[in-house]
Image (cartoon, rainbow, N blue to C red; front, top):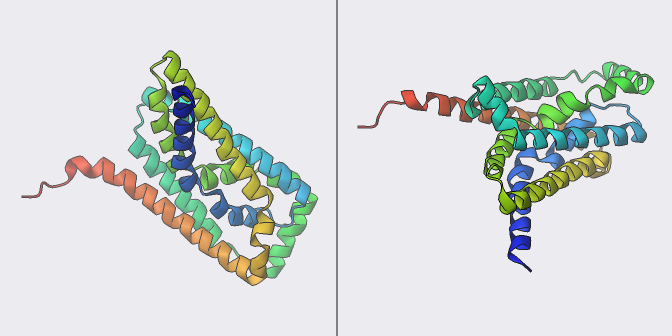
Length: 227
């Protein structure tokens, strides 16, 4: 195996391993089911493809042009974390406090069956962003993309590895969402409901953590010196 091949796979693994735990598509799968009640298998398959495509281009844009966009608008990474954390908190809270009335649930299911276009409108927001690919994933992608600006053979090799890593991330999201119902089937109805609420609570906590990380960086200059 040549040095170039080794460098390619090392960077591919770095991109995949750095973003996958933050993105956590398996953990987002229950929320995908929660936001697509009554959808047919065909609708969910189409939604999964759309979400995976959106995430591919979100990460691609963040990695290759994200730093330039933030620099143009004078926005720092900590500010992105604060704003994104608030958005994730809002989404998690909405899922956590969703009404559990059976009549309401049945009405939503019937509406989803009659109007699948309404479900597809959720493909980008909130399913792709911020539930699956949130500010944490985008911030990491921007940071990884900073090493791709130098040009030369090495940079082109890393760009190919980055594209491959992003593709694998999008593929993992597609597979987890496409077969989300099978992943949760062993839990049963009650277990799935409990898991959905726990997932929403974890999402809320993730949003608080992202917000706190950004706020801590912004407030660091005003932190009193330890004598």
